[in-house]
Length: 81
Image 1 (tube, rainbow, N blue to C red):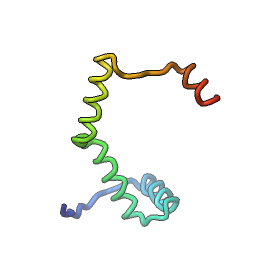
Image 2: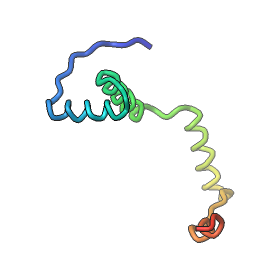
Image 3: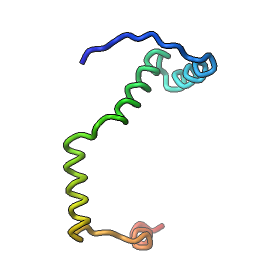
């Protein structure tokens, strides 16, 4: 997939925050902003076909009553917490 250049304006205070976050992640400011925008866009995108199939299967098991569930008490007892 190609890329497109866009000119954006960012508030100075927001820019300073982004610079600090980029430095914490050892990224350039440009790379950090691109990463954050792409990550945010991915969250808005449609789930993959594999994920949809897995969720459909899980929901079907729930509806059929074939899904095994555990109470919090059982989970805590099983894992010793």
